Length: 112
Image 1 (cartoon, helix red, strand yellow):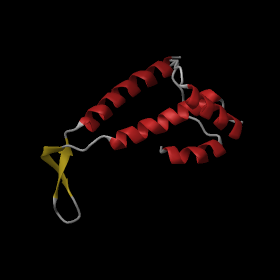
Image 2 (cartoon, rainbow, N blue to C red):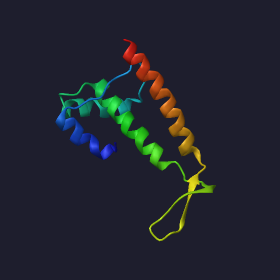
Image 3 (cartoon, rainbow, N blue to C red):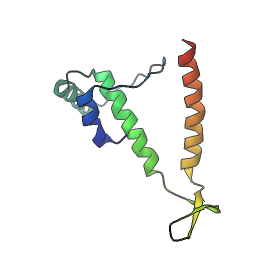
Image 4 (cartoon, rainbow, N blue to C red):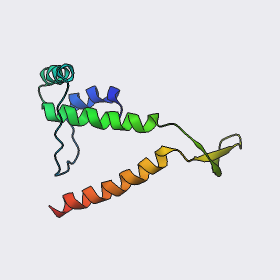
């Protein structure tokens, strides 16, 4: 999800399954003021929901921003027949670790 898509989400009121873990953070005053303003603009959303959704969007955008590092292996060809090389940067590792932790957290949620 992109940050841009959050306004539409907030208008609709949808939400995803949550972990049983809590993460406590202390926000800079200016950021806390922005969260309070958003909560006032979207009264159907709690400050915790807004923070959760903003963090989710930021993580998605971070993943897209990781630099592509061309690997040695060809994994596909483009429409012109030119080789597409594997990404040997941080993206594939981040995705593998994300899947690993997703499965663990999903299992914990299913056990509840």
